[in-house]
Amino acid sequence: MNTRHVTSLVAAGAAIVMLLSGCGSTGTSNSSNASDSNIISVYGSEPAHPLFPGNTTEAGGGKVVDQLFAGLVTYDAKGGIHNEVADSITSSDNATHYVIKLKSGWKFTDGTPVTAHSFVNAWNYTANSANKQASASFFSTIEGYDDLQKPDVDPKATLSGLTVVDDNTIDVKLSQPDSAFPVKAGSHAYMPLPESAFKDPKKFGQHPVSNGPYKFVSWQHNHSIEMVKNPDYKGNRVAKNDGLNFKIYTSPDSAYADLRGGNLDFTNTIPDTALTSFQSDKSLKAYNEPGGNTLTFTIPEWLEHFGQNEEGNLRRQAISMSIDRKTIAEKIFNNTSTPAVDFIAAPISAYSKNLKGNEVLKYNPKKAKELWAKANAISPWSGEFGIAYNADGTAKNWVEAICNYVKNTLDIDAKSIPMSTSDEFLSNVDSGKMTSAYRSGWGPDYPSADNYLVQLYDSSSADGKGGNSGNYKNPEFDAMMDKALSAPSTEEADKYYQQGEEILLQDLPAIPLWNQNATAASTSAVSGVEFDYGGGPVFTALTKK
Image (cartoon, rainbow, N blue to C red):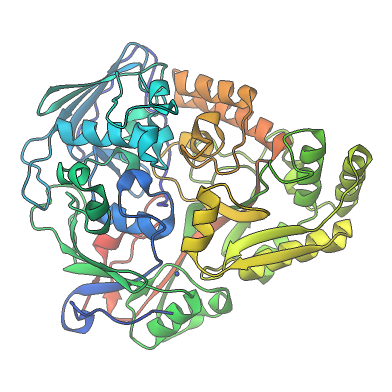
């Protein structure tokens, strides 16, 4: 998913008004020729799901959805929040009531208007569990959400807290304070949808109608996704190019070879094989800047010996302390990643190097063996330890390195488990069918620690309703997140987020590994390469001679 930055916006009881500030390719495009126009060809991977914003939680689809849709707000390179379709978002009653005013004149690429109904209908559809949208949990603080999670819920049931006052006004009532609500408003889950999306969802997912900086042209599966500049777009991200061609690759190495050969304009996925050389390659332009992506691996609690109990926690801590993150960062990532010290990233205000319990993220083989022995005293170890990953990404080398550390430190069988494509891998993750640990990570959708923590580890995000794919559930952690969302200031909210992280450091529902830099490369003809606050590329800024 996209990378962003964080602030907490709401002081208790105060009104807030935000004012507008200002994965080798299967072939080349058949409908556009990048060499004859300012169409930029960029690295892409096959989306795991149809292109519904509320069901898009991975990078392949996220890059595409971000360019096609425009939400209430956008985020700048420093994490500032600016109104997009919203004219204002006003909070009252201790951040439990919001009134959203929309700008007039916005329309979808089919010519229909963007109205309050476009947002509310989309939010209701995403929140309703009958529609099986992966971002349902983004609406968990809105009144009526729990009713929409019942097994027998009517697919047409709606959130009781949402009211369309008129075409340009939405009234939102929350079941609890949520100071992050205005920040979430720019995420995929909150994008508006036209009426056509609900009349034929299957067709829409393959050929979306949108309101963002680009207009959808085609999706040739496992080949390319093409879009052109939207002439009717009225927002903050006006494209400097004529369009984008996301060329779909099954190997970053193949994409990099195409880049060097002039058959691809831009990639923000540098293969392991090129990390030591891409910055000195004179045939390319190289970029390496701090970013907000986190890299982890998840050990789901349904695996034998890894329940959410004393044995499971001891084993997770032992495995974490078996890993020499610093050496892997130097040898494999060529210092384009930084060893993790918590569960979020350095650009985020709640980020801390001093959390209680973060010694579990430090290489300590002696302690790891002690913890593993304690776990064995509870229940003797049997079997092997594996980490699954998608082979069309860049995880192979670091997953294998981690498995070697675990094997050598704990004297157990440990192996990497490649899965052919991102689509196959993510389908198994999303459906809870993984039978081993698996690589994970996060590039947040919106600028809040809430997105790193609540959306990944809160109980409301488990059971297929959000990014909590390991189904971690801890009421103590959930309560701390509620306190953060009710806090009257960013500083106080950050204290609760950090206390929540200290709980995570004991349980390790995912094992933090590294914070990744924003790395990218382009041909010499491309200019305008920029990154957002979290390290994601700003595709609208790209242009070429």
